[in-house]
Amino acid sequence: MEFKFFHHNQKDKTLLGVLWRDRTGRVTPVQWLTRGHIHNIINCINGTGEMTIPNPYMGRNHNEWLNLLNSELNLRDAEGR
Image (cartoon, rainbow, N blue to C red; front, side):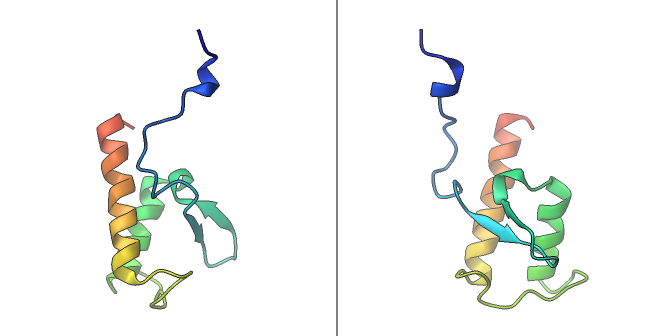
């Protein structure tokens, strides 16, 4: 039997390695962001948050970010976390 760490998660491969840079400059993989942080980012992209996020941002436009962030939330819901 293989060790547990050899079994990779079946997450959407488009999310692996996607990084988010916050207003302090800290870079965090999207999969490590809290649900609250993801919701705050979505609000900012939609123009209802505390900050304005440039379009494009870190090489992706707002629609691409919304798709990625919503996909991450959907994956978390499917995994029960």
